[in-house]
Structures are given as C-alpha cells and as structure tokens.
Amino acid sequence: MENEYIKENRIVDRTEDEKKYELIQNIINTKKILIQSHVNFEYAENELIDYYTYYIKANQAKLDYLIKQAKYQGLMIDEVG
Image (cartoon, rainbow, N blue to C red; front, side):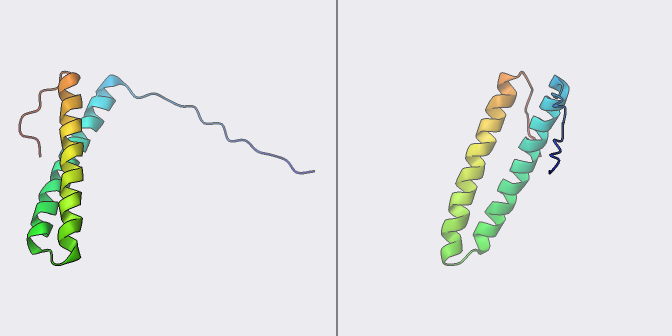
C-alpha cells in the first residue's frame, strides 16, 4: 500500500503595496528590455531583424499595458527606468 503525501501550501495574498511595488518593478524591467532590444535591432542582420521588430513591438505593448494599469491604480508614472 502506497502512502500519498499531499503538500499543503497556504496561499498568501500580497498586500496592495506589494502589488504596486511589483507593478513598478515590471515597468522598469520592461523598459530596460525595450531599450536593449532597440540596441540589438541596430546590429541585427537577416532573420534577426524580424525577430527584434516583433520583440520590440511585443514589449512596447506590454509596457503600454503596465503603464495603463499603474495609472488606473493611481500611481504617478513619470520617466521610469
């Protein structure tokens, strides 16, 4: 007879301040990725041009979404990152 072990984890919800901090960190990180993607695009050749074009577009859409969420939550976003 096999014993079955069930690991029980308590799900702890983050506080509002933690959520806001994480949102700001995501904005900063996405901005850095976007800047680096633009630099990489400048040196890209052949198929990598398409890759970085889509990568830049995707990260710009992500950044726009995150900034919209920050404004919705009442965070003041100036020039982050």
